[in-house]
Picture 1 (cartoon, rainbow, N blue to C red):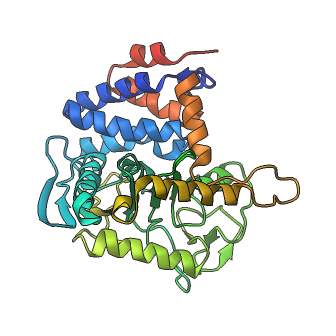
Picture 2 (picture 1 turned 45 degrees about the vertical axis):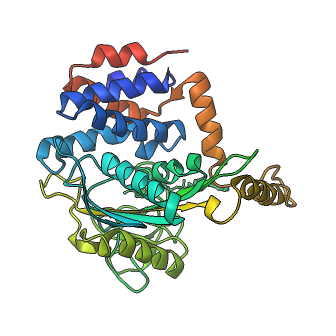
Length: 363
Ligand SMILES: NC(=O)c1ccc[n+]([C@@H]2O[C@H](COP(=O)([O-])OP(=O)(O)OC[C@H]3O[C@@H](n4cnc5c(N)ncnc54)[C@H](O)[C@@H]3O)[C@@H](O)[C@H]2O)c1
């Protein structure tokens, strides 16, 4: 979209972007609360610089509402629970809403039980796994977040996609240091990176894709029509993705593997992804201050490790995201062109062009 390109390099205040997203979602029939909870996840993800999973996802999410695969007017429901666990039927409400309800429930229960699990079924694409893991940190808890995803990843020995790129995230509070925060897919890279190499006509390393015979390939030309992405670290990534499939899909009653609908395609079939969340209260194990001091000590030992030649800094997981987020709140988020393109699409479809242009600040 040509107009979007004119705004490449401009910056947007995260609160303004959130209001824009909320207005678009309210126009699509979402309640203010659901729109706000969804916008909060998407905009926070943009502030980390994880642009593949931020506000760019408004286009497919609203498309899912339009085609009936997501239901704007329902509330997720707790269908069963115990002292240390909760099972939620998302009823195809916005996945960000069901996921926040699930993590809040795990946090509430972990206060008395020490550790709690929440599962969600009948859901769809919940975005960046890390948002929900981080919710636990401000309550002096360790948070974990997992989701299964429609199949696109091979497993060792298979010639076709068998599993999704099942994401996982964990977040752990620290004291003077920033919380440790890891948020990844279990594929070797995100599919968007393969597509970017294909668009640029560049070969890829031979551990990213397999061809239609299941052999590693550096050629992206047939992808995504044929071939599949590889799991990270071979059988190890496969094994972790499988655990996520079990915790998110098999255990919750959601669909799993090939049963999961394709949320990005036009078919109206709901995705029926499942999610899993775990909260662990550090205060059940030791005083929070003692735990945080121990975290700080561990983090500093890693940061102070001898550096590889030519390297002046070792990062902890999450550190890059914290720094980008601080910069985004200080000076605004600089959205890349593919995000701007999607936001202009949303603005055009919802008569919000003037609003979008007014919040994009050129240098
Ligand atoms: N909902 C879904 O269907 C779905 C599926 C797959 C992925 N995702 C999301 O996609 C996003 C991107 O996933 P990805 O696998 O491309 O992430 P990635 O490979 O970019 O890794 C990001 C993580 O690695 C850490 N990291 C990066 N470099 C580091 C370094 N040098 N030292 C220490 N830590 C470092 C970052 O802090 C971050 O936690 C995630 O938010 C994930 O949740 C969502």
